[in-house]
Image (cartoon, rainbow, N blue to C red; front, side):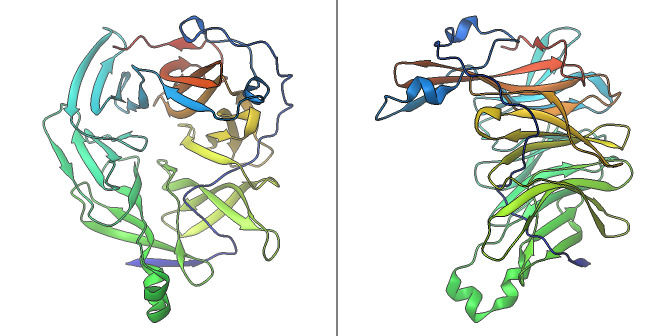
Length: 353
């Protein structure tokens, strides 16, 4: 069954939202070398450090760690990705176990209550992995499938099926535009439902979302304030049971990016990460009861946040953190996983290997 919802905004894959925080005062002093960076280092404006460079290069330092996803049944465990491998880590024992290898993960991972982990790979397909490493299987087969997310029970997944057609194909058969939509499926990939949010005679969806126990999906959406104007982005909540989409927050800035969204277990607060200029990789919180977003953890050029997972008891979150520094005209960036409380305090580095 495909659900058609007529709404007055557009959604897209690369989406953004504004930040409501006072900008920091950039320093013209070069940052410390990467191995001396600590959790609360000050912010640096890389534009000022690179303004005399004709050509700039960015190098990615290894080892780097990505996409933490906490076990919903055991908050001391989480999975992460490193160098074409998926690992499970126990924070009580400090041990890592390899679950899969030779797999290129390109999107945040999600761990469901039925013992499965889902993600998208470099071929834009959804895969599932058993949390004991016993099974690794592709479950979607469309041109561009991205952003799989479990429901609270762990027995259903939603992801974006983004079909690809040429302008000629769409002109000859406009109905093809309705094939790109949100897919709800079982863990084996068999379809349960689909969501078509109609805008400008096509279905559009989202590639980043979070699904809570009240059957609400927090996701990114967008709208244009005038014809020909760029989209402005915000956060909405879609109710799977009633097919209602509720706007929670929009901002006036049209060139931000949201890299992650997560429900708090209370079903009221939604945490999200924005990326915009010197406000790069900043964590905010917005409530379904209304009001402006609350700043949780500020990011900037040399320390920023990209992906997070909130513990099932709501006590802490694990966050993929980037740290960077400049040498000459080159930028060096490393990703780590840190633990902090939901106020953005007590940040601790998880020492992975």
